[in-house]
Image (cartoon, rainbow, N blue to C red):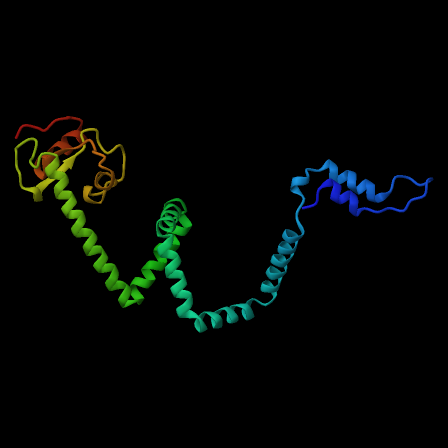
Length: 227
């Protein structure tokens, strides 16, 4: 990075006494008027030129570059995969967080990922078995957490006292606030309870009384009708 003094020292003008202000000094004054912190170093200029050259070269020789890249990959596949796995293990939390955020914030990326996973699921038997095993493990843990949740909230129907966990379901006294219906076992409320201990505003009821109360609320009655 050149300072003002450095720039002045580089400018040498041979001017006679009757001439106007030398051109070199005019350029120096222009540089002095600018913010010198924004002056680009020679190394950065060289890098920019190299990037631009590489971009133009790739556009003119796209197929050749792709063939060379594929050849290099298959020649060094084991080494590249090992380096990629090592990098992923060291930065796993950050990478997963970034991908998760992008998946939920970018509809185009989300659709692309869903399509890619679907195609791989149907075309790769090994991947399909891994996904099935992973889902079975997740489902078993989810069911166990769901049962713990119902026990923590009383473990019985708040109306009739039925304590059969298989027929107990959470009821939202304040409603779901217009949210799209989703079984509670798949809901974010259960996820937040599992991960962060955030307790949702629900009461445990048996399926019969939950259906009766939901129907009454939909009709505007607001209470379980007498049976």
